[in-house]
Amino acid sequence: MSSNLERSIVIATRESRLAMWQAEHVQAILQSRGYTVALLGMTTQGDQILDRSLSKVGGKGLFVKELEVALSEGRADIAVHSLKDVPMDMPEGFELACVMEREDPRDAWVSSLYPKLMDLPQGAVVGTSSLRRSVLLRALRPDLKIEPLRGNLDTRLRKLDEGQYSGIILAAAGLKRLNLTDRIRDIFDTDQMLPAAGQGALGIEICTGRTDLIEALKPLVHSTSWLAVAAERAVSRAMGGSCSMPLAAHATLSGQILSLRAAWGNPEGEAALVTAQIKGQVNSLQDAEALGDRVAADLQRAGAH
Image 1: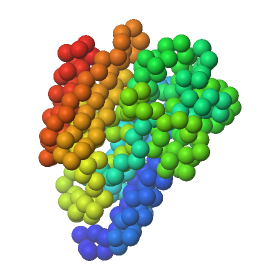
Image 2: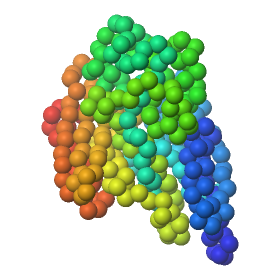
Image 3: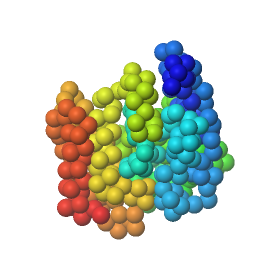
């Protein structure tokens, strides 16, 4: 490979406004480090199927499959993802080369009418397509009506503005990245609404063996964020993680001590939430994943499946 090729990188990305922001963010950092960076925008199956919930049509992998094809065919070098859209087990031939510094991992309450979730009248309609958010919502307000909400960020906000919902729940990170902070009425404390594994973090995927890219991406790595999301994703992986599973996992680091909490709810809504938490010293991704495995085992012992 000639040296000018090594200084040129093509990023595969979805074409939604948020995905483009994420890809352009990585592009700008790499360009500031002397790389020539082009974007390859793509529409994925996950973007096209909007009439059914993800858990019914094949899960989060629908947002990354086409990007992985572009990587394997050599049309792109890296793919930038919202980490919570990346399946817990990477397909053979692909790896996570980098996790960047995490934005706010929490969930945001968005509503024109009600400042907080607790202000809603009985029977009000709340929009979310996440099973995790649905079970956590039911635990907080069993009297509300939860309706599915699909589409990219702008589509979801439009549906809210059209009056289809009294309020909707979105990731705070996406709203902040797109300068839509003024749409946030309230941010849920993690005690109320535990985030999804990887929420708020960006992950960069490559074809296995591209050591040149691992080297190029090293300055973008945020090790604290990577340790936290590694623990969260390990919980999800051990539980058979997919978006058909109502699972939350959130880790924070203080020095070398990682605190990890997880919650699981029955999608049918009969049983109470099952929760587990752990603290431990971590010096490596393997340490973080081991803590995640232990939390998953605790959840399973308490009745999660």
